[in-house]
Image 1: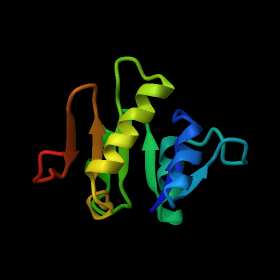
Image 2: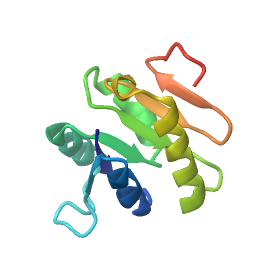
Image 3: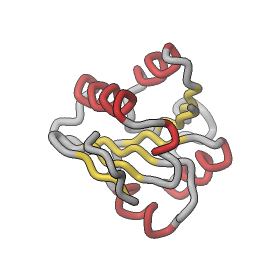
Length: 123
């Protein structure tokens, strides 16, 4: 799979996902750094990448604005530190099939998760 890290997502996800055989794009340190959410979304779609973010706005806007997209994974925690975010990312990678990200926004919370459109498995 190909992922695009939002600037708020731990940089350590790049190494971890790459070691699992995934391609990871990161806008930090490039001319794209500081782009708006809309620009980031467009960039991800052009690159065929799933967005990884902690920005809850993606969960609330993408499903209403776009029916077709590569997917978005939002990790929305009370204490969003690197360790907790990476733990949730590892959980997601073990529980969701690649095809389940397509055209879906998944939000992982401290003890629950929700997907739009819904998924029919307990995760």
